[in-house]
Image (cartoon, rainbow, N blue to C red; front, top):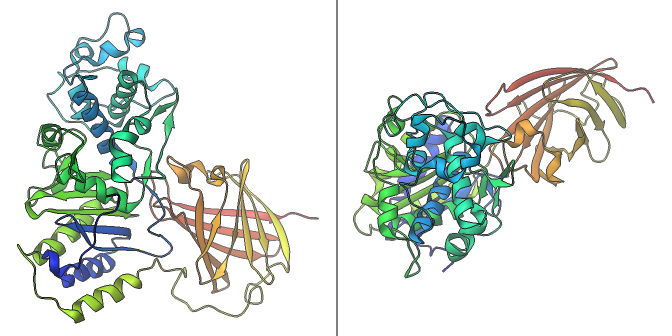
Length: 483
């Protein structure tokens, strides 16, 4: 069984109106979902993707990758290759300072997995990230305090790779990915050709749901025991309380899993709204990919809407509610037009000072590394955003999403934050004397809104990114290159 069976929501005790409420509330509150899969009693009861995001596209998971790394640790423990009580320093003695920090010597693998290494400041992930971690100052006794520590997760991943002799994704392939039918995954490598144990994995939304169902079944899949149930229980149980945070970040932490504040649920999660929520009490899993900033609001929407619509057994089939849900899901879409104004006349007539045909512009220095822009007006309107050492050429549809597939090195590093995207979808419109272009990097959470105007021989560019770890608004200028 590589695909979960499907069933109607009502047959699995889920009110379709509750799913509608989740989608409507998310839209109303600006919770920008990209795709979701809802599983109850082992059946997919609802799923959908917001065009141009699609079911077949993998999506960056960010720190949700940590939960997969933890599962790899579970397999290594099960196979006798790893002990949670092994000292972290014992795996890389050549990288230890002399004399080693006493608390570093006391740190065990379980402290890495539990985010309680004794650090008060997270070490940087540098070129030699293992060495940087082992030489960092550890002021507190390991196990005494929670500190979110992606560097520690990466070191845990490096330890797993050392004891297994395989990359994390290679190790998980026959043990987890193949049995669950998870294909076309990618896991970013860190310096030293080591999988990034704390981030870097990209999967499809439906694959996240299968992972959640595997956890819900406590390591069972298709009637076969893959992972010891005791490990799943231990990894997802409360081990340490976070010192502060919003409700779902102050309810306890397991081994690279978060405890939820409601319904005795737990989850893996990643930046900008990537979720794998497991609710054993209701025999339910929900997987979400998104592009948003407030993940507490995202979880509130999910719990508030869905849990109230659950029943212990099947509920009467409501054809109108089911039809309304199906219509809603078929219409899910990221708005393609930037701004609310309707499209104006054919470009470039409504763009003052716009060139006819093709033109190249050289951009002033900027933090984005954008060195030039090429524009082309004609039967097909086009745009080439030139970054240092790579170009991003796109065709811009008139308020219609058009997909571009390109070399993965075409994506700016500030956008990739990991595995570089290999495709995007682009749409545009002309409004208020500006060419407004929306670029959705559909294997990432990132969407760029680019507004372009022309003033004499100059081009003005405003770029706003929906989410990011750094600044998200840029205003740039450039001059037309003379032929």
